[in-house]
Length: 346
Image 1 (cartoon, helix red, strand yellow):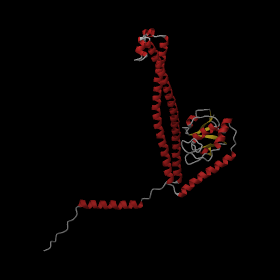
Image 2 (cartoon, one colour):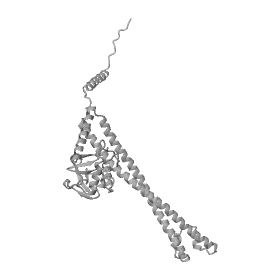
Image 3 (cartoon, helix red, strand yellow):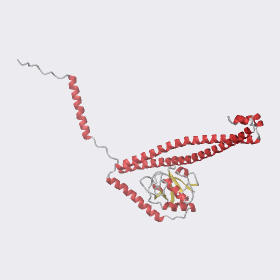
Image 4 (cartoon, rainbow, N blue to C red):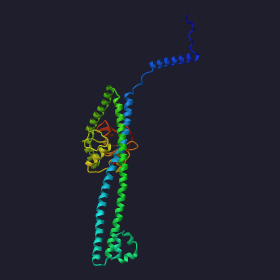
């Protein structure tokens, strides 16, 4: 006969677990269905973030410029020191050859000085420190030994100086690489944000740039040169010929510029050598704290850390290389994005 066993009922614990799981699944589905997709940042938000990244990149650019300039200076100093050491070694060899010739002549006559013979196999300092030795040497020999001693000390100092500068150069190169990576990282992050924009948003940004260019062109027509000093006026005239050339970090012309690259190039055309970075340029000439006292061609500095420099163009306008994505152009001081700190008359 068939068995009529009753089916086994699930335990209370099992029912509870299944009920809880089912409720959680329903809740998850409901939340997933109701969750709104994360809103994309607005054009103004992206522009604000991009501007901040470009500002940070410009700060790092001026630090990069400083490290690069220091590296170039150290390389020149090391090269000069190495040349001096090489020439000094030649001089020392000649002095030693002279002592050897003197010793050979004495040996041939059978009258070689015992102290000179001892010198040839040791250090002359051992003899010059002893009065008894000096008494045994001729004035010619004493003079030759003193020259050798002085040259040895000089060479030791120069070799140590070269060694120290080589260590400094290695540290500077490491800093240069770090700053280069920092600039490139900021620029890459900015580009990523720009790539996230829609075609319409990118067109709107381009319209902003076009308006800035048209405003720059109108300013160019109204600016008069010659109000500043002869050198400042000449520097400003040179900078005017570069309007429209792109901003590139670390560039000093003539095809592209960063902010301090443009100002240093412009003054070089006027026959005036000024430092490479904006912070260093801020420490030359006479400072001018009132905008009303500025003249065309004066250097003008912005932001608390002085990481941006421009040339004053008159009427509250500047001529400068603003940042990545822009070109050398005129712009109102009120739109720079950072406070005016002071001007410098070179």
